[in-house]
Length: 148
Image (spheres, rainbow, N blue to C red):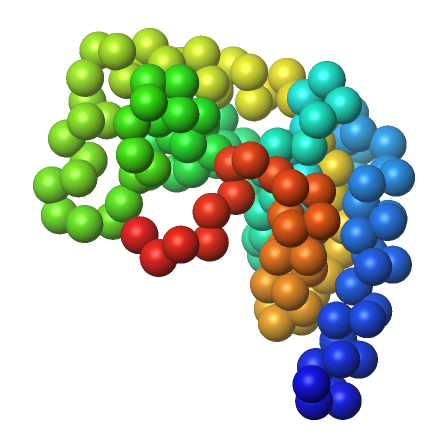
């Protein structure tokens, strides 16, 4: 392993500990601008993401627009035993069915009530590494790093 990469990876654990030990976000509390975030429910960590605008991205996850609400789409697809969404032409047709719309709406409400934590990380490469590190370490069931 290259010394540069080893140094980057070894320093991730400190930020990982900060995010999992952070108090869940409460309305009106300040959030870091850039970094990674974690959605948890009933003590189970479900999804890790990264953003250069964490406050806006949090709201996107329970937006009524399925193309912006990635986590809600993933939950709805899992509830309906559908394959994860892709970006291929024509693959969005299943997102318009009445069953999907209901499951998507329930997922949005659920996400809005989840615990939300975040930690600052402005460097995009470190954001990506930290997102992977947290998702792998926490075994978050809704993270999928496959190319869609």
